[in-house]
Amino acid sequence: MKNSRIKNIIFDLGDVILNIDVPLASSSFAKLSGREQHEILTLFKEKELFRLFETGLVDEDAFRNMIRESLEFPDWSEEIIDTAWNSLLLDIPPARIELLQELGKNYRLFLLSNTSSIHIKQVNKILHAATGIEKLDDLFEKVYLSYEMGIMKPDPAIYLQVLEESGLVAEETLFLDDNADNIAAASKLGIDTILVQKPVTILDYLKDYVA
Image 1 (tube, rainbow, N blue to C red):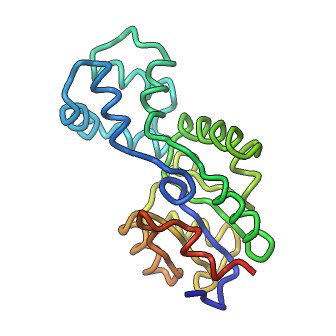
Image 2: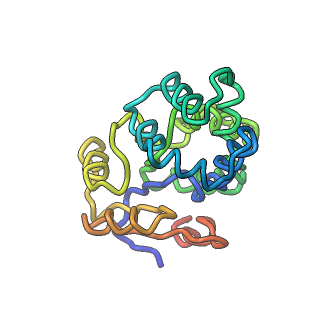
């Protein structure tokens, strides 16, 4: 139901705007390395590989080297690693982009995503192929990315930074995310929230917000 106080809308990226299938990445590395998928996940978790990369504590080259070292394939090319890492990124339905463009006429729109630089490059390629729009920045007033901010959802500090930097009032702001922990953290700060759950999409959740 529409909240009449809302002036700003913050969107997550994965499974909100972009369709993703997270297990595909570990599955891809499993096939490449000849290991079991659960083994890949254990190795990556032990080394905190995703967290380090998605908070910018390691750059692309260091991330790729950590993959090579962890899976014991020192000769893997950048392309092999990036393709496997990006395999979880699926498609962007054009109707969702059209919705954003309509919402942008009446609301300030922002993106807040836990992600990496390798993913964002590929997402922009997917966006351009699907809609002709060059990059995510063309759809939002500001794009907030965890690897650039040095912090990840659901840390409350990431929401506070977005509110402060963009001059947003929590009670006038709506946040959409597919992760319940991320939603809970934002809600505690007074931000209005919507937990996006498949198969329902933002087209359904936000239909009342389109004039």
